[in-house]
Image (cartoon, rainbow, N blue to C red; front, side, top):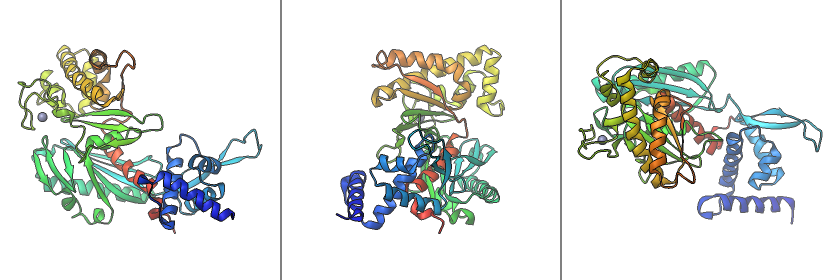
Length: 413
Ligand SMILES: [Zn+2]
């Protein structure tokens, strides 16, 4: 059998193993698929990857792996970096990393009290981050989204000035998203808003692919790293959302509406929630609930997480009691989430990140006494690496993840 034929057969076997459903792929799609496979390996590895590692990990031949790498190098998606000489050959080896000049992503977040824009390059590094503070509840959806589009267009222009081309836009929204529309955002008071149509009135955004998702989903994706691949990420803002990440992938539920833990019932006869139900987690542990319980409702506290943390450090007794009550409700609901999902790591994000020193003890206590398997595998709770900017960052990185999965569209020719 000729080398070429055996290569093709081996590649086909590999592709059959890797393509969902085991369907054979056509030659062009097989090459595209393998390009994505090689680039994902480079993207997900914590250290530079050699051509030999790509071949051995994917099961492709060395020759095929080298051809794929040459395509990715020529297309401007990876670059070579020196590796330390190996003991075996003694020759200096060459590793591959993502090219910072490769296509990046724009993430936008519309939230109750701010709009944020983040541009990352292909490596996921932030090159532009802007926050436009302001209460969106006093605006119509059309006006708020006009501002959002302008903030996004300004971020695109800033990225262009820094030499980063952008492959697409992803928009994080605080509610139920389906098919380009925001069906319901209880804390904004918005219902059935055609976000895609309103944003793409701005010509700069029309030119790029546009994706929409729930802000908690994107915030969770922003926390994925080679060492953190399975966890529940909780975003504490005015609303509370969770993103469920299993082996680096978001668990979205059947329609993308998973993770609405802010509306899990804590006390059935409790106070009314914006969603129309009563006694939801948000009325006990949301940002406004904490401010109210601490006697700070209606006061301007600037960046709420940092301002509350500063006040807690000074020992404000009403705030400490409010945080402890919020942590009790949060821990109780999270225990239910962990019991159902069999996930042992919780990541606290949004305003919960700066407030973690005051939340962690009680959240941890509730988890250890309510999660059935906690004696064998104690749940761990940690602080998110990214604070309030996590959703825009995760949205931007989701664009880059799509480039990495299907790189053939973005090769520079
Ligand atoms: Zn509710």
